[in-house]
Length: 182
Image (cartoon, rainbow, N blue to C red; front, top):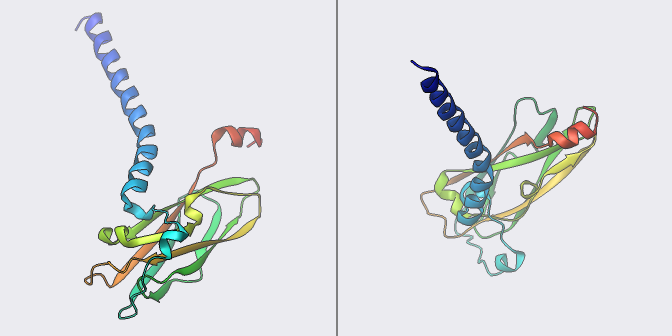
């Protein structure tokens, strides 16, 4: 092959890699917008005023499981004392999550929610959640973070258990890490 063909292949390869990189970085904000609009992955915020119009269904209970996990390399403790609870659809519940920064530096964390089965994600409504915002903790700092939610009474009768999981990721920006001398 000639040099011009090699250069042509190299330019195309670099261009494809650049496009793939841009696509990867654009996926997170696009995914978050998609989830906020559709309610998939439990990212729907419901106003307290809207909740007040929901009627509680005391004729059935739904089991709610709460699971926490930490992304590899995230030096935090992250848990909830409430692993499972039985809820009446339409009734507002509050649970608390605990986080502690075990490192010697300030770290910002972001909890990414997920709901299973996926069809249940349309029926889980949160009026308050630590997962809506990033949490910045100083070295050794700990925090209790509330989550208020209810299961919509229109949840299909075939769904008896809803699992809400939260994966904690390090969201500390490289700029702030450099400013802290890390």
